[in-house]
Length: 362
Image (cartoon, rainbow, N blue to C red):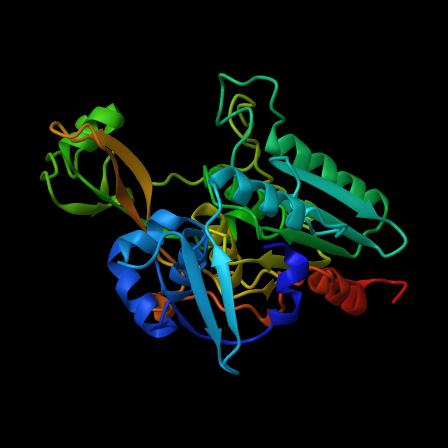
């Protein structure tokens, strides 16, 4: 079935699939999908819907889906192969939109007439975090050059697009935030670490950590900064940074003083969500877009292991990140200051909003 044949059904509410209500299907599928919150679950299950094996797992037909809408229209959708699904997805996502996803780790573009800089930040990874890939750019250098160009051109608004960012090494977020808020005054997240033999295997450093000279217990969680070896030390004035590591901005006079807009999507996850949460808790900029699919406080830092009998590769988080604002640690979502649909195939609604509210020519 082509997209043209489905066009008349777009926008209609689905009542049931193969005779089962949508709510019943969502409930039946929940045990099979691990998700941070309901938004994340709804995003993940929509991806599973594309595959016949998933419907078979729920005890439904894996050949044809019979979809009934609220107005009793009936649509027959035959199963397709994974390659067909990929081709359909690629065709649908080729959009002429400023905020359309790009095949880059990070990239910025300056619109001088509108006095806007647009940074699409898709992965917390660069040459420093992936030392075996020297061809990759350095994020700290790109941000430094971006800030210098913005200052030279008197750019009034910085847009940081994180809607495609699934995370990575959070030190890149610390680097970017150092240009948006004074580093020494920034309230950081809390980090707890669970001690385990698996942790020692992956991160041998923790074999030797102590608390007041005593070894921590296996199985318990500890504040990262409780350890004698990881207690934060103040950075002295005039500190010369080692360029083998990410260079952060320690000069308060170089902090960007213009408007800052973060774009959040359902797929903004892990370190990207940590960055936006930290920005909010420190009063940096505003967030626009969709409600987060990740919890502001969440588990991370994945350790891999192989089950001995089946050979199945498993992932286990060893750290728990808590936001700086302890009054909001129980929030399930990071709700944007302005809710904007990011999935409209015809219009770039979030970019239109930015131009309307911050563009000099609008």
